[in-house]
Length: 235
Image 1 (cartoon, rainbow, N blue to C red):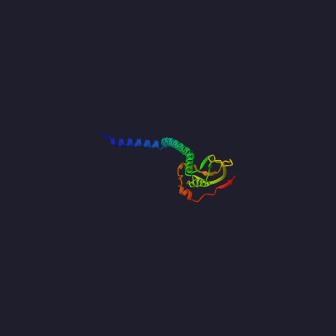
Image 2: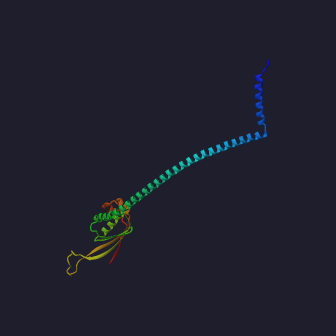
Image 3: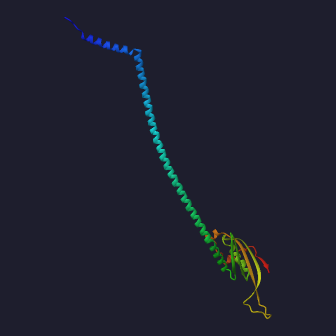
């Protein structure tokens, strides 16, 4: 009877196939090819990862750049708006200053003239001839038959809370014909002594505009220390 061992035959075939593969792999040419393929695969993997990571980094940087550009645009818009607001505020401040200056210029002369009118009204027998202004200097000219009235007027100007300052009073005595007097026996017309005065003073328009130039009373005007004595010049 013939006996055939199938197990041994299968095992022998498998061992033979493995041996053939080992022989092929163990050959230098095959090893070189396998190593080359492995190196190429690893190189492609590294290059691919580098390309992918570079693209991802580039996309992230472009996104950040767009965000920075948007922030810069918003900042430019805010700076432009702030500059426009500053210009508007500056323009409004200039208008306010111009209005204040105009009001001071308008109120100053009227307040000074009103102050003069009130002070002249409180001194009987005082007559105003002219008022001239040159910068901060004012020249007041007038006359009175009584020199004491001129002195009282000077005192009233001195006590004006800074409206008038640096007073200088000059007086000149002059004889004028009295139109209302009766002629004497010799035919000559009676004459009257008149005190012509010139007051030079400085005044402050801001004080005039503020309206703080309080009027002195008659008692203070007559009882207060007198200013520099008027300089009298006789003709």
